Length: 515
Image 1: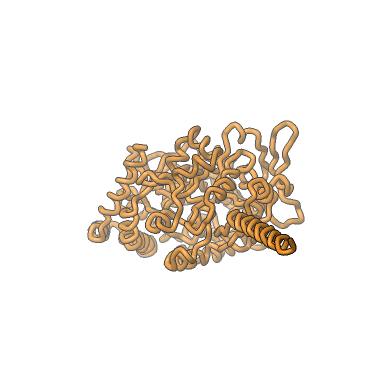
Image 2: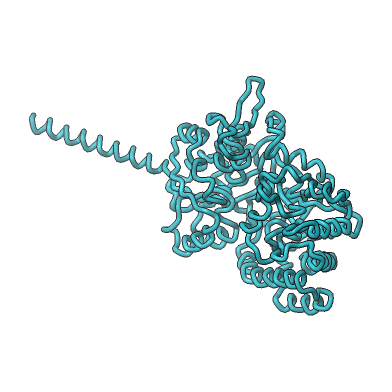
């Protein structure tokens, strides 16, 4: 009998051990390592400790071990991780600046296809797909597969960056607000001549940036995706740096440089150097104009001297403003799951909690439970300004205490009407400024999907071609010669395979509009 009791005790102990082991394994299966990339380490990692994340963690039984990376060094780190193989990867990548299609599609053997898993584990996102098919089309690749989760940002304007002009300088020089591109040129020259260290426009310039700001009066807006593809006046896609209106825009920029309207360090300085020049509150800003989401986001304390300007009329009499809704408002690659993940369904169940109105509000502005948003009894939500002693503005607070632009989210329009924004900072200012130029917004080349073969070809063609057109742009602005060298420039692009590059984009666009 003693031996029987001993045997039974051993059996019970073994069963208990197995039960405990199974429980531990289940817990491990619900704990996930997730890489997330942040624009700057200045914002820290407080975003991983918000009450919203704690709530959905408790609701789903999921624990996330966040692995933060910083954008400045992420490119090299990412390349090393992907080159090292699956063993070097986390369970998932969070946020659209973590991985691009060019990272995912050629390495699809590392990642979990989500096409059939989303209907099983994500009722919120599935309902959104039915209500807004563009969300599903956005994250479906050229072969009809889904590898990542999408987003739609809330409370968004029609315009992107707008031009803000130094009203204090206009008043000081008794100058009117410029209304045409020639008047703008004269105004920028006058600003540069008005005092030591002043310039009409100070920037860390690039062609990709200038196509969407300084050169816009010539109708040269290109996709923010960086491929320099645009839509012409007839709505047809084209490669902007080969067009006649681009050549005229370059000639205009050259004229500005020759007349001293542009900072001499326009092509050589870093963004940190620019910030030092335009954010100096003691000496005041040294630039006549900036192109920015809002004046305060770029100029900080000097924003009080600037007002949003109506887009100036270009040579064709039209006014142009940057607008790229599919790039700025929608996105994909917001959650990509690797094959290291032992329980992708559970992780998708957790991610599905992001796809509600209230969740999207909190992952954009900060958590209700943390005092960033006040939920009112009348069903409205008030986004609160940071305390005066915090030393940060609303925009910085949002990036510090939420995922802001990154991660899964979707807010219905009817819910947006119940959100109250401060009128003095951040999105409240942007939506008010948006009204000045919204009527001038035009479609541009959208975010499209490419096959693995197309991505491989683009990876071969794009770097050399885009570097060449960018170098030529800087050369022509600072030294001149665009008219005399134009034909040779076009011939060189043809030799580099530009038509093959264009055809890839045209094919992807044709599939996009056929969806």
